[in-house]
Length: 166
Image 1 (cartoon, helix red, strand yellow):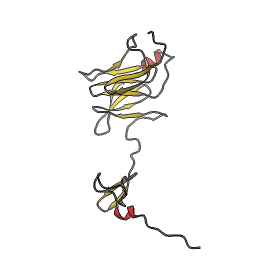
Image 2 (cartoon, one colour):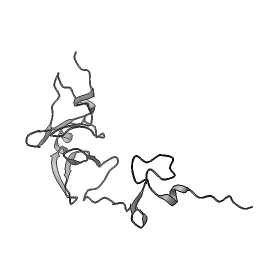
Image 3 (cartoon, rainbow, N blue to C red):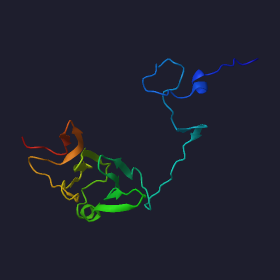
Image 4 (cartoon, rainbow, N blue to C red):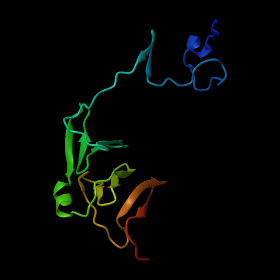
């Protein structure tokens, strides 16, 4: 039995040249896992762990922020430079060893360009807007320990990790 042969028009015409081109023009609008070149599409070459660290699931977490390119491990925060070298911003291993109730969870981050606040539910980390130095932010009654944090229209929004006095 003969199979039905057909041609996908988008493969012949390629990607749309302009973002305002009609959607049903017969061209492709996105190109996933391929890099468009002048001679056609070339498969994307993945980098396999360019950093000198040993990954343990679910770490490392990489955040590409407005000012920083940060790599979060379970107990350390690094800044990723342009040549893929890591600069230690904050080492949390002594704090995690001193507080056995702290858990290694994934990090959430809120980016305010010069000010960054990150939390993993056990500890909050902030950056100084003037110097860029990272430090632990102790919870207070007006700013409790958050289990998650987000930048919502320029405001810090989060869910408190424990009972918060009203």
